[in-house]
Image (cartoon, rainbow, N blue to C red; front, side, top):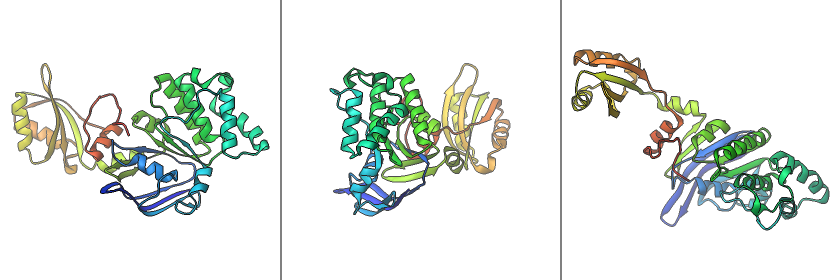
Length: 322
């Protein structure tokens, strides 16, 4: 379906994409994650045929990106972050316009327009001006233009940006439904979206893909060391911090918080101490009491921050915008 081999893209002295290798098979729903400037948008523009790579090879649906870019554009569906809609038309007029622009025959239009309306749930607003629709329905219209010609590949850039929680859920369900029959590449900064919709994740940082696979496989690959959360009593926060830094089996102090009757710490330990025994021994040796000890399971946000060197900003499960 998609083969990307050693692809790089330069803008003058800036290398926006660096030696990317990706293979995406038919029927996959792939999430593309990364912080600002990671190269996601540039990679998507390459995949849609709007930019050529500076080096490397790309084959999409059996077509070469250099010699058959127009063919690629005609056979994929693309929803940019700002949906390309004409707000002075009503929904049906707009779908007819897109069908004509896509070169659908009369018989294909008679078949595909009703199918697209049903697929994207637009029947109730069919003759309303697009300008009068909610943002959620406008996104549905944008998705409709991307699927009206029944493409095998859909590329969606931030499809739920600006939607309220109910609209987000609706669009996710719509993407899941469409994804049962098509290959979908979804760029997003919303972690829950990736976990709810995508079968595989590509994480980009500084132009390169730093991890790819299922979220569980990526978690496992970077969790060779373990992080434990402990409630410690018996010394001040400063003293506990010093004792942690003196312990050779601890990799680093991840976080520390002073509570009413204890100090909460997150400690990264070596794989050899992944059963937590080093923390028990450390506490006993230093006359400390462990009130609680549990191993921390990495969330997708933890994985993202680990791989991109980012920092928590909102604490609400989001990532920096693409």
